[in-house]
Amino acid sequence: MSTNTPRSRTLLATVVISVFVFTLLTGSSTHQTRPVGGYLDSSMTYSIGGDCWVKQYEMFHKNSVEKLSRGESVQALVYSCESNCGGLGDRISGIIGSFYAAVVMKRVFVIDSIHPLPLALTLVPAKIDWDISHLLPEKNIKHIYIDAKDSHKRQERVFGELFAAHDSGNLIIRLRVNRYHLGMNLWAHKRLNNPYAGEMLRLYRSHCCAFEPCQPPSPATTMRAAFNVLFKFSPTVLKSASDMQRSIGIELNSSSYVALHARIGGQLSSNISWQDPERHGMEDASAFLRCGVATVEEAATNHSTTSVPIVVFSDSLEFRKRLASLDPRVKLIQDSIIMHVDRSTSGGEKELERGFVHTFSELYIISRAECIVGSSSTFSALAGSIFVPSGQQKRCYKHFAECGTNDMSFDYWLSEGLR
Image: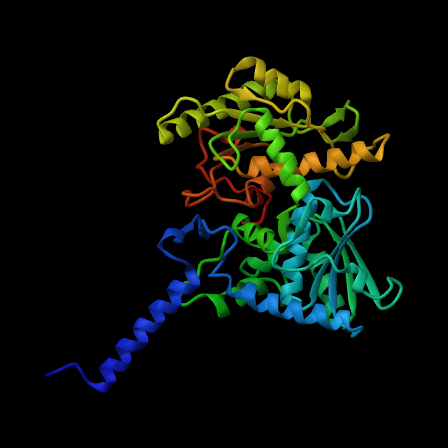
């Protein structure tokens, strides 16, 4: 009996269309996704599910900004940083978590970050124009402020307080938060006793997944998605990063190097000084170098070359020099001003501005490396979460102390406790 009936042709057409839609949503064959450790890891620069959720929020945000420009009232979630906001890795991960909360709440997202300098000096809006704090009503009018600084150990309370403020109909919610727990709890299977927990994952599954099962993206993947929706590095940072790369002989727009980042902490002595909790010490130099050398050898094999350099970054100039003295492949940027974007003090505004730009320039260079050897630092983790070099299915990122045991896709955010 012939199967070429109207019903069978309709069924076939439905299957073909479904496959086509699925291809659009999940990307081309060069951007395949696959479950990794129970999570979906993506090699796409920013896309999760073909960025369908981005387009929906982008349109909502644009319309909301137009209303604000006309003087109309719009509900907003404002990431606020006027002082004491955490280091660069802490605060950017806090911003990204805030952004996902705004998406879930259907609020316009605003970044009002002026400490130690306006964020727009180093990061500028990409798909979402978040630099619109000047359009908001005065801070004493219908604003509620939630201080969630260093709140990763009281996640449930902060989560509940934030969404209770939203449900109460507050026009403007200003939020100071660091770390990524807010975003992770919105993307995870329901872990908290709150109806909004896991809401970003439900939104993603309802709009972006053509077929089940739809694995939850890893924290590093969701961070990368939001970072590239929100941010582009400013021309000032890109020029500074280009100068730094040129100074150590790295070809521009090339990822053929291994970046090693070591957060030492403690009391730092430099033109822009600060004190930070101790993380690692000079005694860890050999372990960092071993991991860097092993990673270079892997990269050299992949590229059929023996000249892959190691570029070392650290808050300790002494540590940088120590590694450079131990292996000729180690390169360091001589004139980079080392600073902590939250705790540094400076005798001059120009020096502070240079240090601020240099910090983001180093973030850019580390993030573009073929592989990153990181330390117990959210700065390392941020660099390993915002970009995937061309040709990699998942980010090559290693923790220096687990270099011989963990795979190439160490996820710092999972090591923070939300699994």
